[in-house]
Length: 236
Image (cartoon, rainbow, N blue to C red; front, side, top):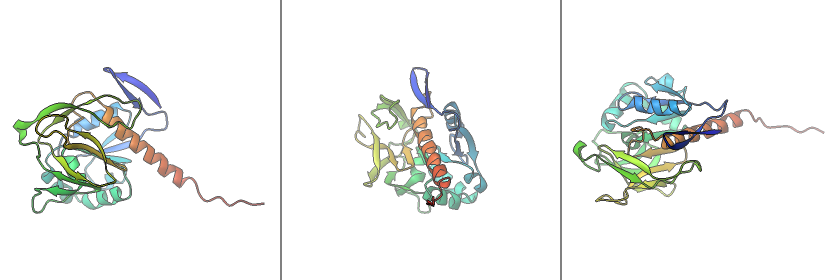
């Protein structure tokens, strides 16, 4: 892999042969911004609206938007079952804001018929920070896994959820640093699944997307290695 510097930030770009195809769930929400971020990092970024398209991606981004609407459209477009299966099979997925709700196993104050895709052993609270007028920005300490990335992340919260509790296998990546919600969990990872309450696609900081691209790339390399390594029979 090589590194490049854009607007003062250092990001990791894929080496030849490492390009991955990452889908952005495009039923509702801020799809274009995620496509732009992934493309800037060298991934093949595509929209996902049909069941067949779920099968053609190495990873999936679930954008911000309205989680209840997103849930209804996922079911209406017959995307729920293929998404559930792919996530259960280990496909990497990243959710921002409403995407965090979609990946959570449990929701506080959910609408009676609301469903999630699940996978993250967390309980989230919808609109935890308040209404649209209560949107805010804050610099957060972030637990970067990529040694190239460092420093705080500038987080933009728009009608955002937070994580009420997280299971023992969930890594907490960031918490609110100040204010009435100080200490609330707003970024998590569990295996190949990652989620943030805030919107890293807003602005030019690509480090969180770069972390997800690295997760997708590592998973695909692992899968291709397993499929290309049949049992060897030694002969005398």
